[in-house]
Image (cartoon, rainbow, N blue to C red; front, top):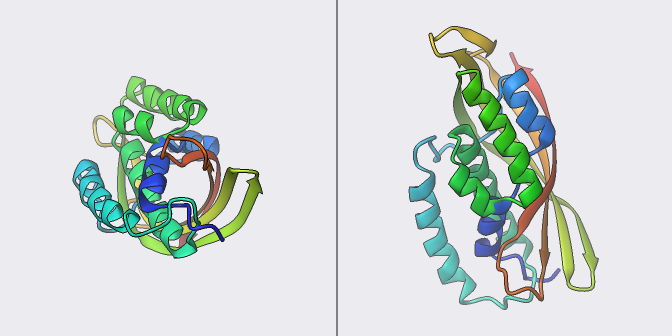
Amino acid sequence: MSENFGYIDIILLAIMAGFILLRLRSTLGKGADNMPMKARFTQSSTNEVKQEFDKSVLEEENLKDPLKFDEKTFIKGAEAAYEMIINAFANSERKTLRQLLAKDLFKNFDSVIKEREEKKIKSEMTFIGIKETKILDIDQKDTLYKVKTKFVSEIINCLKKDNGEIIEGDPENIKLVTDVWIFEKDLKSNDPTWYLTELSSEEETKH
């Protein structure tokens, strides 16, 4: 495979990636922020984590051919992107999402965030960790690549009114969440970002 999916690309991708319409909507209707985030990420550390990750990515990118795809590198970058997007969405960080998501997906994220704000709904989420990351498919047309990636993670989440009343979810139950995201990039483009263009998800509660 081409080594072209660099950490940086994916990170930006992640950041420019959009979130599943279903996942976004479930954010309001089903415990909105059922969105997983890696254990080392907290809902207040997005910028710090991104800075640290960007530094390591830059160092590694300098050692790789930017036009070749490396699966291991891609997966690491995709995981970082996954975490950052979920974290930014949970914290309503529009600036971060705008930088990391495709335009249409950003609009979807933004509409859910607005609705959440209007209804004064607060999301509380604990990300247990990512259990599995796997590339499902790579669709290549000339220099345009679309990489379908599956993430399986564990989270605890619930939605609360501003008075603390729980309206959705359970702060005691761990949910196993499976997300399938598609990252896209034209390798000829000067834009280093891998954009998240499509998503889907499913959940099940662990007892």
